[in-house]
Each structure stands twice: as C-alpha cells, then as structure tokens.
Length: 255
Picture: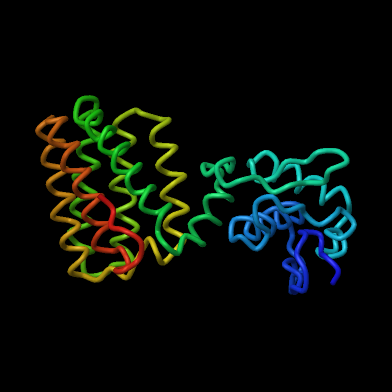
C-alpha cells in the first residue's frame, strides 16, 4: 500500500481544503498546520507534505507556503533541512509562549496537563506581582483596584460581566506591580486559556460570590501594604478558583 507524505499508509488525508478562503493566507496555513501538529494528526518525526501538495491542498502560492513553514520553524514546531524535507519536532521543542502554539495546545489539552501547569505558573507569578503591588502601588492604583472590587460586587449575579471585570481586576493589580515582563507573560497565558471551555467552566452566581470573597481578601492585604499576606491571598484565590472550575475526573487536581 502506498505511503503518504507522513509515512503512514491507508489513512485519509490529514489536511483538507478550507470551506472558505481566509483573508490572511500565510497565517491561516500556519494555524491549520499548527493545529494538525499539536493535535497529533501530524505526529513528531513526520515529514510535512511537500510544497506542491501544500499549495494544492490550501490553494495558495509557493511563497505563501514557504512563509508558513518559516513561521512554523520560528515556533519550534518543525525543522526544515535541505534534501530531508520538513520534519515535525518533539513537543519539548515547541514554543508554548507563542500565542498560536499555546492556543492549539490548550484546545487539545483533554487531560488538563498544560492547563494545570498554566495555573501553577499563573499562581506563582501573580502572587509575586501582588506582593510587589502591595509595596509599589500608588494611591491611585489602590483606588482603581477598590473601584473594580465594587463593580465585581455588583456583577456577581451576571457571570459573563463578572468574568470580564475579574480579568480587569487581576490586570490592574499586575499593572500596579510595575512588573512589565511578568504581566506580559500572564496576559499571554491567560488570554489563550480563556478561549477554551476546559479552563472557563460554567461559573454561576454562587461561584462568582465565592471568587469575590477571595478578591476582597487580596484587596484588604494590598490596602494594608502587607506584601506577604497579599501574595498568599492571591495564590490561594487562583488555585481555589481553578479547582472550582476544573472538570472532575480529568487528569489530576492542581495543587
């Protein structure tokens, strides 16, 4: 039986034409190939389909395909070698801070392995930044945080609005820490995590009320300029909130 370009036999094609032609072709090719690689449809060690085949599949030019492959290389997903083709790299080589790679990884994280790790990282970094905010926040910073806390109190009965203000509350604390790098890392991680139901869950008014009790504990420690207490309160909140949302019987609980 003939082998396909990934070295497998008797299987339907992994890559299929788009139902509608996207506006940004190279980006769309990159995202489609990224999803196929991260999902395991094109596994590590496989050779990507050759350039003419990719052109035909996606209905794009060679220039577009080359641009997409270069982007995959920059993300650590493939290694292109002249005479050997373009090989999919092991997951350990993938750049998970790249938004496209992270988004695909989160979407296919059925066992919540990456989401558990993401929450651990978020808890550690955000707790550190909350401690910094307790020391460095201006009076205006603290007033803004208090105003957001009041809004959260008002929105607990409307989870969709509460979630958006919740994000703003956390971000305002990070902003007050003046830790630009830490804030950027958290924003990248959290933005992609929030695109999946596995991370968001289905919060109701009761869950929002519980979260806001924890928010208030963080705010109280910030206003008291208690850096250690603020850090502990934030770490506890992030971990506890994740355990409330986390799908039961999948993987192992975050700690």
